Image (cartoon, rainbow, N blue to C red; front, side, top):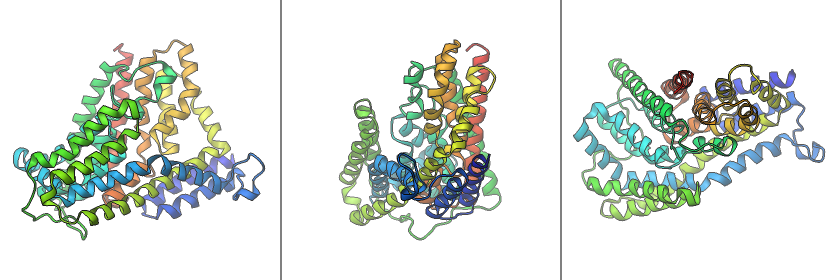
Length: 437
């Protein structure tokens, strides 16, 4: 019981501290310490028995494991974004969009850009790095409050594309080996749910933007923002060559290289952007330096949250909670969806929720005759519901490291679009399955 109290209390404290803006390099070890003390986990390696985990070792294993797996994607993604700024490519795209579809649809352009990249196989983290410079330019040109940029980026990346049928994101692929399904599992229901989430979410985003501007909120420039008044911008088609290169290389090499294809795709995007917009460059070396520093901050923040998650999973109460959640009564599809969503909330990770729950749930429900395609889609969509709580690594990285906002200012619209909208989508999905679709 003490372990469970410590686990729930530490998770709640981490969410509160994150919203209040505490440095995650301080907040996550502090909350992990609470978990360790209430769970009887040794604090240091010399205090642990042979084969037993300890606080420092477990935390750093999660931290360094994430850095090892994602460092080059963060690095090249951040540099690519900075090169889009330095060469004027981001402003060129923004100016074209504003001129052709109008400032009222600036947010729509950002959402579509994120959706195309995400469904094209570019990692969610990298999409935020890549699109942010253009999003900033669009919001500046349309005079929209910049605190909505994180929500706009997230909505286009982690809602109607991440868990939809055919998506190359790992959240759509993890169930396959456990269920014997395909990436296109239950595509009919998935299409309806994706259309609903896209339309309803965009309507809600537009409504929030209209209310904010009606209250007098406007775009506020900050020190360090890229220059918005330059006239020597590259042609629109040149500005698009870099993002097209990222999408093309990622899509072409995804099956053969999996996530490693992103390294080559982003490197190609950096090279193509510089070459295509060479005459419009300002300080390429400075942009690369800033991008490198930004990548370290972003991956450090995310790895800190992953480190806490590793300690949380080592607590005895965690597996007891997982066992209870995965054996809830009810129909297989709905129960599995609830289980995955709750575990994703505990770990702060959609993929983590699936990876922990599916080895337990899949044999049980498949033996009961549950449709594996329905189970696949319900699990995929549900993993993207409660994973986007304030302590989620993607949320922290996008709000703090990429957009330089605070949770207090930016999380409310982000939570609305990445928690409530997918939650409604999940309910719609379950209803469609109940109707026999």
